[in-house]
Image (cartoon, rainbow, N blue to C red):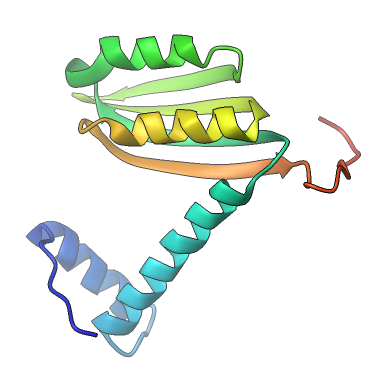
Length: 140
C-alpha cells in the first residue's frame, strides 16, 4: 500500500542517515520497521495489567506547558515515585519513575502525549504483574 506523509525535512534527513548507516535496503523497509516498533510498544503498554513499574521519559517546551504539566503530575502523584528534570535552553527533559496500576500509568502516559508542547514520550515497563497473578520476585 502506498501512502504519503508530511515529515519535517530535517527529521527525514536524519531518518535517511540512520537507516543507511544500519545498512537497510530502503526507506520503505526502515519505515515499516519503525512503524512495527511503535505498534509493539503501544501493545505492550495496552496489554499491561496489575501493578507495573515504569520509567517515562519525555521532553517539552517549558514555557508552553509547565503549569498544565504540574497539574497532571499532581493528579498522578500516587503513581509517581520520583522525577529527574534537566533544562536544555527552552527545552526540558524529564524522567518520571512510576509504580502503580497499569491503568493509571497508561492514563498518565496518554495525558503526556496529549500535550502539543511535548515532543516525545518514551515508556519502559520495568515490571508488570501478569494477569494470571504471578509476581516477579527479587530486589526492588
